[in-house]
Image 1 (cartoon, rainbow, N blue to C red):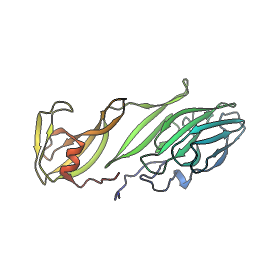
Image 2: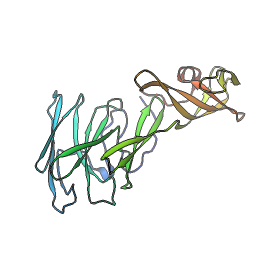
Image 3: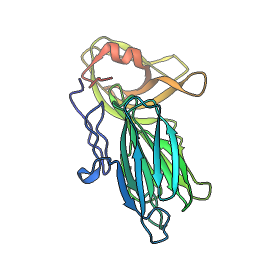
Image 4: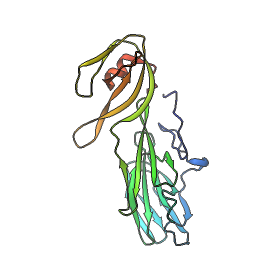
Length: 244
């Protein structure tokens, strides 16, 4: 089990199957009332799902939407992605563990519900048009940024070449770090018992645009930077808080 959790800000979901929690101790609910489309009239909002069902039913005022799910649906919450407009959004929360957690975000235009996008967890929603979403990745917390395109009606990811890690470890067995992610020329060979700082992670792409692992940018105790694969890093260091 994971023994240490990084602190998350504002609206937070606990990782690895711990109880879901929203800001202010608010939990996902089966029903709510809010003015979603900014017309000054609150809509009755509800989500229905039965254990084992492959779909859920979301209603807001006169609108009904059926959504697919492979996981347990915990309920909904009302969020405000952009406080500059008069609208609010509905988030439907599903999944039992960090590996299958998913949040679907919907907008209501007065007549129908439309999916704006999907995020892992609502780590931070401050009303500035941005959602920050955290995902646990073996021993570190990956933070993704999603921005709302109001004109297109889409909530999309903002690409990052690297993700910040910021975890310290001790070298158990000496290994080299390389010049780049692709050039395997050694920059340094890390000495056993030395301390290192894992600075950043770069996803390793596979077919279909997805990734299944990372390579890591590491700072040695002598201040040198180099890259190492996830397999090598985990096998030859100790002190990282590993969970999966």
